[in-house]
Image (cartoon, rainbow, N blue to C red; front, side, top):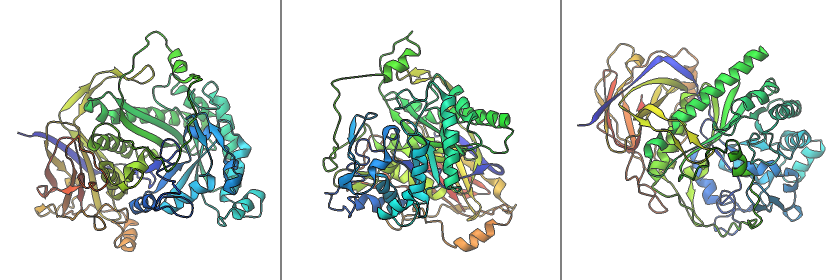
Amino acid sequence: MAKKAKITVHPSFEIGEISDELFSAFLEPIGTMVNGTMFNPKHPTADEQGFRTDVINALKKTGLPAVRLPGGNFVSAWQWKDSIGPKSERKVHLDPAWYQVITNEVGHDEYLQWAEKIGARSLYTVNMGTGRTQDAMDCVEYTNFPGGTYWSDLRIKNGHEKPYGVKTWYLGNEMDGPWQLGSWDKDPRAYGVMVNETSKAMKWIDASIKTGVCGSSAPFMEHFPDWDEAALDVCYDTVDYLSVHHYHSAPPGDTKALLGGALYYEDYINTLTAMCDYVQSKHRSPKKMMISFDEYGGMVRPNSPLNPGWGRYNMARSHYRFNPERPYLWHDPDKMPERRFPGGDLTQMLSMASIQLALLRHADRVKIGCMTGGLGALCASNHDHVWRSASHYAFMQMLTFAKGTSMRVSVESDTYDIPAYAIDDTSQYTGKNGVPYVDAACAWDKASGRLAIFVINRNDVEDYALSLDVTGFFNGVAAANTEARVAEVVDRGWPFGANAAKKDGAGKAAAAKKAAPKMNFTTCTMYEISGDPEAQSEFGNDEIFTPKVNKRAKLEDGVISAHVKPLSLSVFVVE
């Protein structure tokens, strides 16, 4: 007999508005992300700039709202001015962050133009490691100023007459990390002062932009959250986002710890928001600091040997490594190696989706979310082909249905415990007790009159008889007993395009301006992603994780009854 679980959602309990950049992606020239996937002049589909149009076309169909670029650790020694103009005159540099050679064939303009081609906004990171305020000012002028100045006219000369109009700028990358070139880990206040002056100067060039200051690179950092507070305290009045990163890891085979990673993200977010609000109160400021989670991920990592007693030396030992035998790599875009993560697509997808649900539950403060590997999640690729992995379908469900207002959810299910564990000396996790097997988040799109409830079953063995109570949204008239309607999930007709919900847009937008009344929902569609946890999709076989419509789900008197399978993601769309 299936176990039971209950989820309750009520219109009185809103969290906050969902930003359209909450589900974005991250790009950095490491591995094959740029050389091979994004850029390969020898590829049969390459355009005049050497970009793979098979990748461009696949990403453009998704409606991805934004991409953070061009990095990443790479940015902290990158000189953007050496990457513009004729390619034959660009300078080739070493990238000490990743021990690679940067040819600058893909430079500042190419990154921004590639983002334009896939239909995404650029979220740009400037060099605050070896770079300084003047570099950032010149970059904004080159990128956004209409013309008539040295840098804006140079952009026009280089072939882009109109300003790029980049609206979000990050002032450095992981500047608290000792692994960072030009790191400020030993002087957060000095970093904050530089950010304050740089953000102020950039906004005097383009007052329409928003800026982000780096917070801690992970909740494991010994100086978290003191470092964040010290930096933010001296730049609070000039920045708009606290930029943070985190990568959750679990040992091989520990699916419960992997899918329980969302709880560690929520702890991190709760500490960050409390710290931001404390600094706000010190400044007597009416401004709420928002959070940009512009790198995140979940992964399986084998445990490394531990070195008890070394304390803070463990961080130095891990990152101050100087190996004379380590070579610098040249990446040939046409020699793209095959890279597949161990294990199946399903568990990786659920790990990332659970993090996305955590961000959705904090949509009042987390306004930007950039999945590391998000481009590959939406468009898996090798040297020759592109296809859709399980993560593609889950990401598309978020892009399609996570719109409007994030709603609080009450979840009742049985639970499990995660014992404390250490992946290595610097990635150590406290234990978690009472982790619910059923994870959920909800979005209410008042404009379209649609409620979407996202449900993950973390249990790898048991399914759950789920009762989903949405009676609070009804106007007192009991809805008819309606079976979930059947929808075809095929290529161009499938319902997970980002524009799928734009029918009658004008009328619904006008209706949204009025106070939203309680709804009288009549239909519920349950989309379900499940399958063999060891299966991997590939070119020619990329529909094994296509969302299926579960026709057994029923809506009756404001309660949805359904079964959720082990290790599955289900989306209930109520209209």
